[in-house]
Image 1 (tube, rainbow, N blue to C red):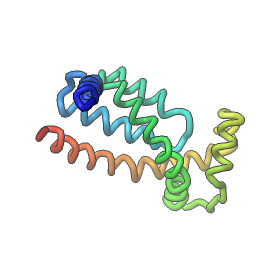
Image 2 (tube, one colour):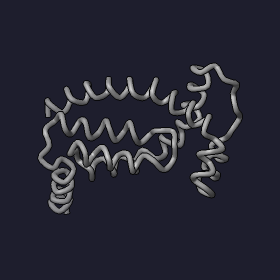
Image 3 (cartoon, rainbow, N blue to C red):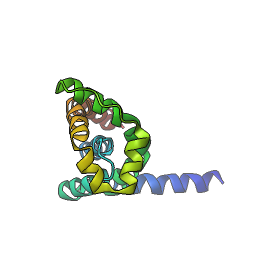
Image 4 (cartoon, rainbow, N blue to C red):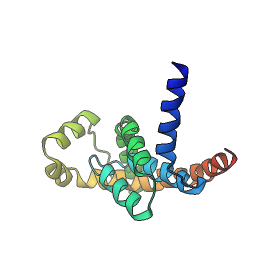
Length: 148
């Protein structure tokens, strides 16, 4: 049984690494993690696929990580909006995550038009917080992956 599990683990690891260099593997992880938490629901998979194909990164790893990061994306939408509201010095809106999710589920484009300013604030908060953190994590992960 243990040998069978090791075989599955080795095949999965080989699929996720796909012969990439540590730098490419680290880029796949960071780009996927960064785009997975963008505070606009429904666009991360498209963006990850586009960037992954254009830069020839590990798409199976990126999509898998994107699905694992979905709860983090939901958790961070409101904080990103709050940071953006603070940065742009705008009055605070009191939308809940439940309202935003149900609105996206009922009509994606209508939600984009109704909440466009809040989503713009969230995007600003994401750019000013998540991007610098991702760059720092990229360099740390690159050091870690080079050792292994």
